[in-house]
View 1 (tube, rainbow, N blue to C red):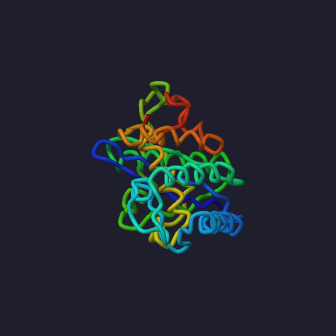
View 2: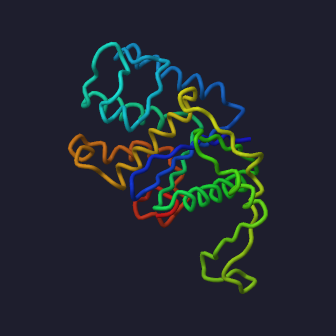
Amino acid sequence: MHLVYIDDSHDNANYCFSALLLDAAQWYHHFAYLKSLRNQLKASDGIFTTRELHATDFVGGRGNVAPQVIRRSRRVQIFNWYLDQLAAMPGLSIIHGCMADEETVFERILNRIDRTMQARNDVALIISDQGKNYDGMLRRMRYVNTIPSAFGVWPSGNTTQNIPIQRIIEDIVYRDSESSLFIQAADFCAFALLRFLAPTNAATRLGFDRSVHRLDPVIFKTANRKCPHNLGIVGQ
């Protein structure tokens, strides 16, 4: 079984999601790896190990994350370092998605996860940040999931076909991001994607508009082979 931790980062025009796919049998090793990263940040910069790191605030220079002030330029360095460590995380795969409509992009990511699990002959459990609820969508997609043909028509001659989701088990599990290192990691990835697709002046000036490319080794690029950015972004 795979565990899929998913979170989003958005502005007025873009909803960006990052889904972190992990082998459930290796969960403890993944957890220990993320915990070690926080311990390293404690040793290097005094960052509290129990404080939630929310990418938008952290990179923006907001919040007391350590006993002393950590300048924004240093926070960007830490942000990039953290993405580098995720890119080196054994067994991790990341599926990115971004569109203007939140529900549409989430639906497409669910379809991509389902197809990925089918290819791997496995199933997945979705774990998302709380405050959202996509259960109705997932339940509907188990019965009605209309998929257009990538080639114009299916062998049946129809332009669409009902392909119910079968590889995502149970309802989505919702977790408080404050208590989940995995959700926080997904948030960092989603923020990196947002600032690549919708860079701000500060992102360009400080250089984190290109940070998403640090995740290149673990990005599941076949999620969308036609992505113009070669990042497999669903919806692009």
